[in-house]
Image (tube, rainbow, N blue to C red; front, side, top):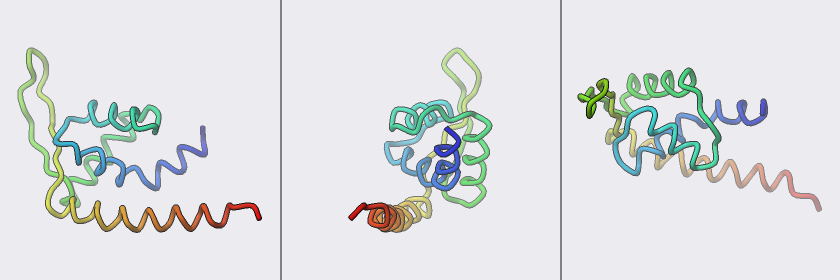
Length: 107
């Protein structure tokens, strides 16, 4: 479990950006998308600071909306810069994973 958490620290921002390619969403739903994608449960204390960081970097845009019979929700969507960052960082990640896999191959 600790290993997964260490890996997640390095790629959470990229995964959050990737989760938002399906369209805007609020925090809980983003966490559900990440879990359904195989990352396991993401604690709010991990996810929400990442969302705030991405918002401050201008990679996501957020706005509050009234909830349907419940509390207001903060919805997030990719900014143009977020889309560009995801494309660039995603390509870099694919190369990195390929390199790691090549190193781990047993002859």
